[in-house]
Structure formats: structure tokens, C-alpha cells
Length: 477
Ligand SMILES: *Cc1c(COP(=O)(O)O)cnc(C)c1O
Image (cartoon, rainbow, N blue to C red; front, top):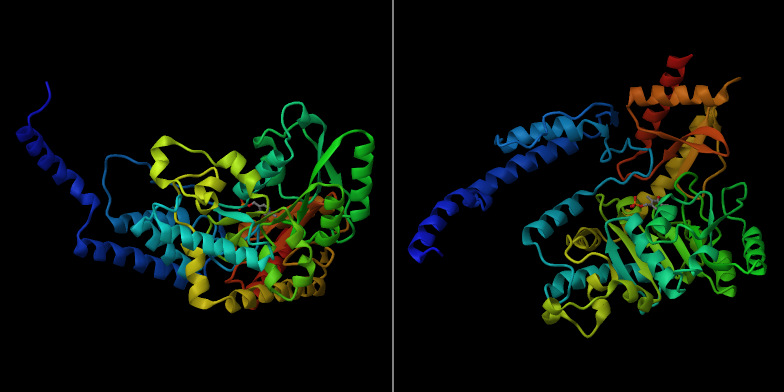
């Protein structure tokens, strides 16, 4: 039997007493905000002196019925998150590809989460979606893409790549029996998210050709063209070239303009991965990006070279019909939200529907500061890379070829067992932890990388890194 309304009202009152805690009143909100803001301020104030890398295991994070105060949780956060692993907010993160997380974006995320607009469809929040689309518009201008191109703000480069490759696959009809003879060309220095995306979208059985590289780790265009011709003569089906504008390991920019011309003369899809390096187009290195506007698809990661907190990538694609093919779907319960302009809705050009209003974290700082501080910061990273390499040469290290951007590598010329000894040096650097560096294998050699991209990395950070490297070298000898 269903309940009568009198009992329902009594029960509702009981439930409300329990659930009301989810909607704190103003005094409670102020107190909570103060606790978190005080913590955040202390965290930022401490950044110049903290270690960049700490190896420890998390503890006390199990979810039980026990309640905690917000202050207790800040302490748990400090131990487990702020003080463990790589401190990616500090300028001392010179490993992998650093980012930073500028403060204004943090506030934008807070605002987006509190107001919680629905950024998936225009009808639900015309303003939030217009802001997202304005960010994409800004990116199209920056990379000289036509107004007719489409784009999406994603969670990062890997998802951007998925969207781009799916469009390429659908544009060229690479499915069923077609997959096996299809050929994709790339440099051995591509980011692994490239091969991963191919696997996810059902192109695992396509043929990947690794194009040989020059002494600066850039793709050799003559070799690319020869490979395409050979594959055509073998009756295979070349369909995509992936170029990288800033390789993760070697900071190289492939010769985009020449690759674009080759790709298009053989009617191939031309994809550019600018996840790490893309925004260097705003710097004195802009000439290296000539031809990027010829890309059929381009990915960039504002959470890398625009210093935003992790969780923002972007993809631009010229053939919007190919994008709509796999992402646009009409459902009856969405009928109020349909729009004449399909491309207006982010959900039509992305696998995501409901999502964080992530465009605000990029729009807000660009509106607050303009572009100049971002450009200055990127120019600084280019100079610091050269400064670091020069200092390493002074203390007897070997360095890799001059990079196009701000990632490079080095190794110590031990007399014997170079790889083993450089690996020991890497371990010593990790135990030290003052500044974080990571390693790689390049041309069959164990090397230590420097990736200089965090906005808080300054000249004194590099000086500290050099001291740490000298200290670590002594420790293993
Ligand atoms: C980081 C990176 C990616 C992957 O991007 P995520 O944002 O980590 O998913 C792809 N390509 C390059 C060159 C990168 O540096």
C-alpha cells in the first residue's frame, strides 16, 4: 500500500535533518572556505622551498562511516597528496611534461563547480557553451584554422587524439577489411597516446610505419615520401600522417610544412600533435610551426604549455562532418535541447555529454591577463633550457642535440657501463628529490631528460638542479 501524505511529510522532515548538511549555511560556508583557502595559501607559500619529489605510500584515506573535520582532511591531504610523488605545482618539476596550475584557473574551476552550468549543450547554458566555443575560436585564430573548423575542449591530449583519429578513420572509411591494408606514418618519437588511440578505435591491425629521423630527431620528409610511394606500389592504403610539434622526449618539431604538402599531395589525413609544444607558436620559435595551419586535425594541451591545472586539452578538426559522424546522436529525451547549428553543442563533437565546464579555467585567465605573460613565460622556458644545457656542459656532461623547444637530455660520460652508471645517477637524483627529473632511452642510450615547462621554474630552479646533479654524481662515485 502506498504511504499517505501525512506520513510522507513526517518522513521527509526526518530525512531533511540528515541531508541538510550537504547545503551548508553562509557561516558554515565561510568557515569551510577559510579552511581550504588558508591551506591553499600555505601550500603556495611553501612551494619555493619544498622538495619536488618524495617517495612514500599513501595512508589513512579509507572511506569509512567515521566523519572527519575539514581541517583533519587538509592534514590527510597534505601528507598523502601534497607531500608525495612529484610536486607538479612546484617549479622543480622538470620531468615528463610539467604544467603548473595557475591560481586564476583554480578560482575559475571553483566558480564553475559552484555554479555548475551544464556545458554539454547550448540550450542548457548558452553562456557556458559560448565561453567554451570562444576558447575554441581563439585557438582557431592562433593556429590559423578556418572559421569552419570545429573543435572541442577535452580532458587532455589522449582524448583529443581519440576524437581526431576517429574523424580521420570515418572520413577515410577505414573499417572492416579496409583496416589491415591501411598505413599510418609517424616518427618513433611520437607520444604513446598515438598508438594507444589507434588501438582503442579499432585500428590496431593497421600498419604503422616509423619514418626515420634526422640528427635533431625530426622526421625526414624524403623518407616519408619514399615510404608512401612504396606502400602505394604494394597496393596498400596510406591514409594518415602524424607529425609532432614538440616531441615529449626530444623537444623536436617535425617539419610541418613539408609534411603537410606530402600528406596532401597523396591525399592523406595530416594530424599534428602539439600537446606539449603547441603554444610555443606564440614565441620567437613561431617559424617552426609554419604549416600547422594545413593540418586536418591538431591537438594542444593547455594543461601543459599554457600552465593550466591538469584536465584541459583541445582538439581542432577541419572536416566537421567526419566529427559529427561518430559523435552526433539524437535522443528523444534531448529534443528540447536540439539546435539547428549542430556544431554549437560540445556534445556533438565529443564522446562526452555531461561534463565539467572546463572552458572557464582558460577563458578567465586569458581575460584577466591577456596573452603577454604566457608568452613571456614560454620564452623564459626556452632560455632556461639553453642555460641548463650550458651549465651541464661546464660540469662535464654530454647533452643531446640542440632541441627545438624546451625538452632536452643529457648523460654523464662514464668511462665504462655508461647506461648502468647513468641509471644509478638517476636513482640518486630521485632519492635526493630536490628537483625532479625523469629518464628515457634515446638512440639506445639511457639518458636523463629535462622538461622545462612549469611556469614556476626560474633560473634559481636550474641552479638548484645543477647543485643536486653534482651532489648526486658525488654520491655514486
Ligand atoms: C602529454 C602528451 C600527450 C598526451 O596528452 P595527455 O594530456 O597526457 O593525455 C600527447 N602527445 C604529446 C606530445 C604529449 O606530450
